[in-house]
Image (cartoon, rainbow, N blue to C red; front, side):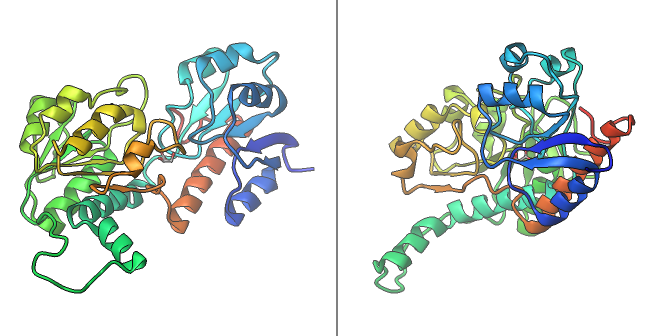
Length: 319
Ligand code: DGY
């Protein structure tokens, strides 16, 4: 038996250092797939502690569906926790935490990866080489969009937005504008704009980094996309539901915007066939935090949170 004797479910297979640290304190069950509502309700009845992640359904109805709830903590493996209704969890006596900070750089890097890959048509080029369709260098071959000096517009200026701003400004001499509820440019070469419409229409590259959840669902709607320049490139490293996905696909199909780079989708892991059919977008499988170092660091934050709960201490990253 583990040190605490408490039963813990981590809903996905995880990395050895994280698993070892968990096993020192808990009786660990490793899951291997997303929990739907029924499975999540059963987990709440069965385990003392749960480490969930995106794709697990801990919406408000799940706490109502569960019988007697045994679980006292949801220590989310990730910074975004829009799959957890934290108000409902707290109303049922649970504490909730996440893993901010440690994934900021990795996620900002994926934002820049998508920005560059979309601007420079790297996905198309890669497919061309692999398929044997490349016929050699030519002055007109796969011409992309210049990045250096273009205006970078950031929607949501939290930690990740700020890290993208620094990369754009210092790495690519980009003037940076941002849209955020509060002013967040202390020490940063960035200018706040008044409205989302202003940001969408001024930026050459729009990068969305807002947290998901009720407050930001549908923030980038059809009208916001329509305000973009025809040469504009749209990048989403936040959550799929922040964007009207159908409106985005319509804009890409119509050539109303130049391209999109996406790491997140409304119904992950399902990606609309209309999107995968398009050449003017680069599509990644939610890789924002996917470096070995970052995923271990996230796991260790989740471990520290759940241990604090087991020892009756405040959670270091409680939400
Ligand atoms: C995060 O940490 O929010 C990542 O997107 C994985 O969920």
